[in-house]
Image (tube, rainbow, N blue to C red; front, top):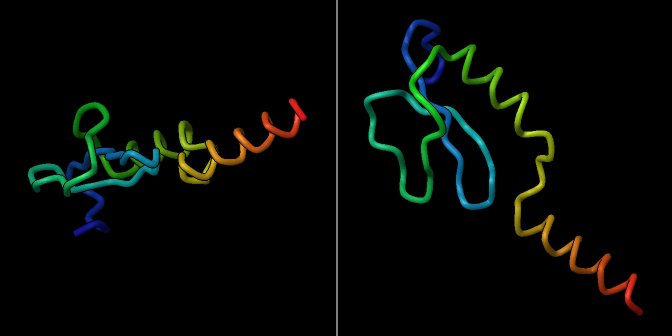
Length: 74
């Protein structure tokens, strides 16, 4: 399913700002949202590589930022 080079795919992202690909035409799982239009698997993976530069989940990034801000104000 995910290794068909000729099938169209969607880029999907969840609330933790984690990215993946999903076959076009299949129901997107709960908690995931599409980004843009269907495109080739290669194009989707290229887009993800370009935009997902910090692999840490959003909640972890926010905790680290809050800890840094708290440390800076102490």
